[in-house]
Image (cartoon, rainbow, N blue to C red; front, side, top):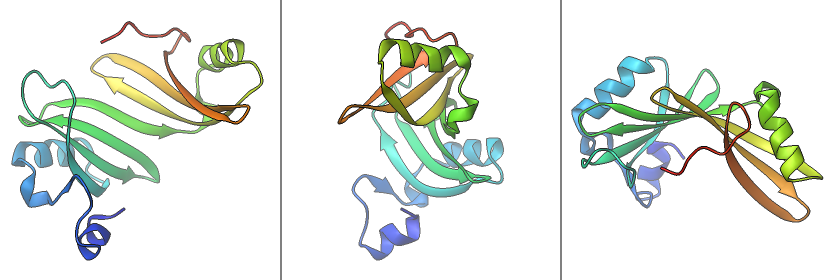
Length: 143
């Protein structure tokens, strides 16, 4: 939902106005993603080294991007929509092996510093499930 739509609907739960977001957060996002269209800002419960974190929901070139930024402007995590055809083969194979007869629905690429992970949403029977794997199809160690 856009910031305008949130304002018209008398605010969205948890969403912030741009003026409520620390300037380093806004500046860091704009510098890293200059062509992105911001859809919403929110305060996030995410480990950011003892400081507040903010999520910037956006679209960049038709791709959804959710970016977690620490209050000091440090980009902590980027989640971007990913076409299923762009998932690494080992990730697809791991989901199919671990969850037979599953149907892949959507995926996101998650970047945390130097680490790249893939979140895959799939249906197995009547249930919708998700799993996060690294590029080799392995579950990452717990945070």
